[in-house]
Image 1 (cartoon, helix red, strand yellow):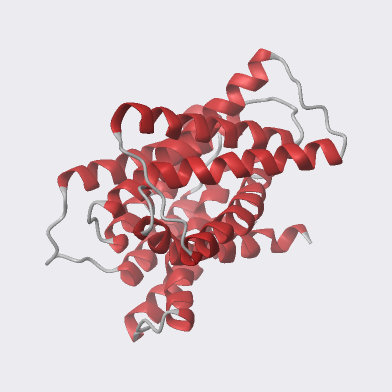
Image 2: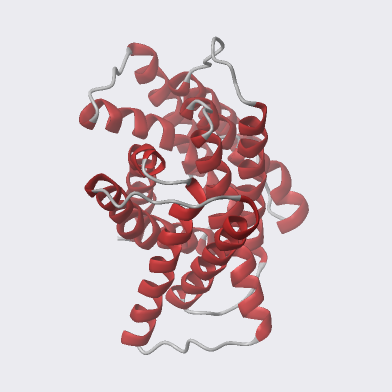
Length: 282
C-alpha cells in the first residue's frame, strides 16, 4: 500500500491546480486560504479526538509544527495564490515552484547530511526538463514583477519547509501535527488580511465545490501523504516526485477542462517520468 502513496499524492496534488482558479475568481487569495485552513485545522482536531490522540504537547513541538505550517500553508500557498490572482500566468508560476527539487537537492547534503548521488542529480535535471517542456515558456506574456517575486518566495518557502519538516524530530501523531500546521497557516493568512488586504468571499456553488475539493482531497489527503513521505524517505527523493505534477495537471486539464494536450506535452511527460524514476529508484 505504501508504495502507491507517491502516485496517489501526485494525482491529488495535481488536481489542486484545476480548482485554484475558480477559488481565486470568487475570493481574495488570503481570505480563501484562511477559510480553507480553519476548516482543515478543525477537521484534524475532530479526527485526533475521535482516534484518541494526545493533542496537547510541549512548546518545542508546538512551535515547530506551527512554523512548518506557516511555511507550507502560509508563504508557499499564499505566494502561489497571490501571484496568480494579480495576473501571473499559472504555467510560469508553476515552473518557478517546480525548481524546488533542484534547490532541495542542493541543500539536503548541507543541512540534512543526505548523500545526493550523481544519479539523483541526473534524474532531477531530466525531471525539470520534462516539467519545463510541459509548462512551456510564455515569453510573450507581461509578467508582473510582484507576481514573480511572490512565486520565488513560494519556492523558497516550500524548499525550506521540506528541509525543516525532515529535520525536526518531534513525535507528534500525524493528525495532531497536521492540525497545528493548518492552524499556523490559518493564523498567518488572518494576520495578512488584518494588515494588508480587504477580504471578500463570494459563496457561490463553484467556490464551495472547488474549496471542498482542496480541503478534503488536497489538505486532508495529499498533504498528509506528503508529510508521511518526508518523514519516511530522504527529502531529495521525496521532492523529486514533484516533477510529475505539471504533466499530470496537463493531462487532467485535457480530460476535464478540454485543454489541448500536444506532442510536446507527451514528450515532457515521458522525460519527467524517466527523471523521477532515475532519481528515486534504489
